[in-house]
Amino acid sequence: MRNRFGELLVLAATVTALGCSEKDATKCQEALDGTRKSVAASDLVLTSQWRERSYKYCEDQASLATLDKEITTKQSQKQRPRRPRPNAWR
Image (cartoon, rainbow, N blue to C red):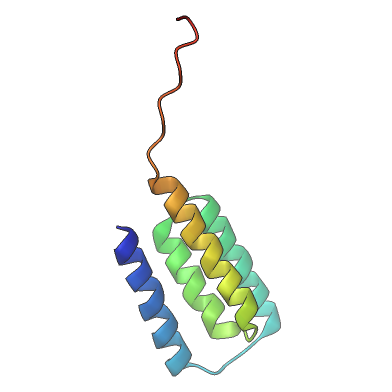
């Protein structure tokens, strides 16, 4: 699933970079906020949609790179298996 999500990120970035040059600071901030809320809620579909919107409206590539890092970090944390808690009664 991790590879698939990475491929989705690359594809979305490529499509949005080629297809749109409309930048808007207000819409950019709304999209960044929406993406982060979707990531926090672990909603992959909304995260993808908000991320695409971020790439459409944001001009600052550093913000977009940070956003992508946040998304992949959250996804890798979610996929990591949890270690069993030690038995306190032993």
